[in-house]
Image 1: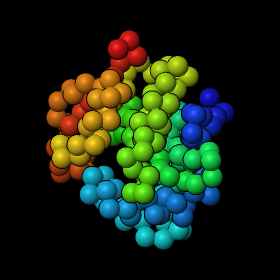
Image 2 (image 1 turned 180 degrees about the vertical axis):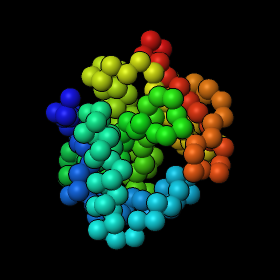
Image 3 (image 1 turned 120 degrees about the vertical axis):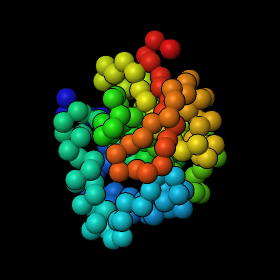
Length: 174
């Protein structure tokens, strides 16, 4: 199962994040909406971003065959965001997550990526239900999850996060 492949949409490549993405991950983890809605990961250098990838992303990829993907625009090879599947502590299931740099928001890239990853989750990885978490105030994320067909399942608390989050759920039969 470690032969995780690059996913592809009409406009995008989604490939497993690797250490070569460290500078991009550093920028993304320190972008305003990441800090506001996801949280400060205390990654302040390219080397600490490389370590974050090694410790937080690559082990899950090796264990499950899926993890974080770097989203790359086909037309010019620009790294725009991330979208992936996460085995997150505190969730009884797999979490769909995404984040984009500010200049790539509101152009349909997040929805396109999330649809692609959802299809892979159900079709390639045999996952029968997907979850997603977001803050109540993150209206653009909530709208995207609803456009994917996810339904609000209620509030959830995640270990290490003081804020109560909203839990969304989608089953493969939905």
